[in-house]
Amino acid sequence: MIDLNGKVALVTGAASANGLGFAAALKMAGQGASLFLTDLDGAAVDARAAELRAQGFSAQAMAQDVTDEAVWTKVIEAVIAAFGKIDILVNNAGIAVLRPMSEMTSADWHKQISVNLDSVYLGTKVAVDQMRAQGHGGSIVNLSSIAGLVGVQGTAAYAASKGGVRLFSKSVALETARDNIRVNTVHPGMIWTDMQQVAIADNKEIFDQIVATIPMGRMGEPADIGSMVAFLASDDARYITGCEFVVDGGMVAQ
Ligand code: NAD
Image (cartoon, rainbow, N blue to C red; front, side):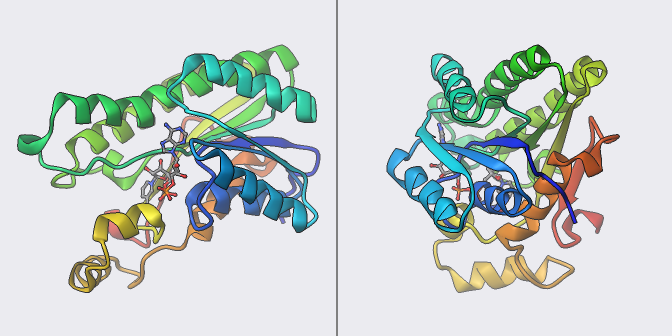
C-alpha cells in the first residue's frame, strides 16, 4: 500500500466533488497525507476540505486563482502556516476551451494558456523554491491530457496548453533532479467529471460514440486518476522523474 504518512500535499482545482483534484486529494488523504486544497470557488473547496475532515483526515482549504502570481506566494505561506512544510504539489486546476481554430478568438487562446499552462509554471516555481529551502525533496504532479500527446480535432488551444505542461515538466524535472524534487505528468483520457459532462452536455449519442473509441469500453472514473497521482506523489515512485503516465483505458495505444 502507498504510504503518505507525514506528507503534506497541495492540490489545486479541488472544489468539484467528482473532479480529478478532489479524487487525488481523497486518495492521498486515505494514505496518510495532510491536504491543502485550493480552487477559484472558495466556498466549494472549503466544503471539500470539511468533507475530508469529517472522514478523520487532516485538511485545510483556501480560495485561489492559479493564474495570479501574488496569490501563489500567499498559498504557499498558508500551507506552511497550516502544516509546516510542503512535500507534494498537484497542479490540477484547468479549463477546456474546445473550439476549432477558425472559431477561436485571441481572448479564448490566452485564457486557455493562462489557466492551464501559466498556472503550472507559477505553482511549480514557488513550490520548487520552498522544497529546495526545506532540503528534503518533493514530488510535483502536473495534469496534462491525452490531448497533450496526440492531435484531437477541435482542441488546438487546449492541446497546446497540455503539450506545454508535458514538456515544461520534463525540462524542470532535469533542473530539480539533484534536489530530489521529482516532476511528472499524468495524461487522463476521457474521465467522467464536470468538465466532460459540460462538454458532452448530456448528449447520449456523443457519449456512446466516445465510449466506443475506448478499448476498455467505459469512461474513466476520477479515482482512476487519483490512484496514479497518489502513487507518483509517494516515495514508491522515488526513482521516477520527467515521465508521463497515460491513464486512458487504452485510447492512445490504438
Ligand atoms: P473540473 O472542471 O471538474 O475541475 C477543474 C477545477 O479547476 C474546477 O473546480 C474549477 O473551479 C477549477 N479552476 C478553473 N479555473 C481555475 C483558476 N483560474 N484557478 C483555480 N481553479 C480553477 O475538471 P476535471 O475533469 O476534474 O479536470 C482536472 C484536470 O484534469 C484539468 O487540468 C483537466 O484539463 C485535466 N483533464 C481532465 C480530463 C477529463 O476527462 N476529465 C481529461 C484530461 C485532462
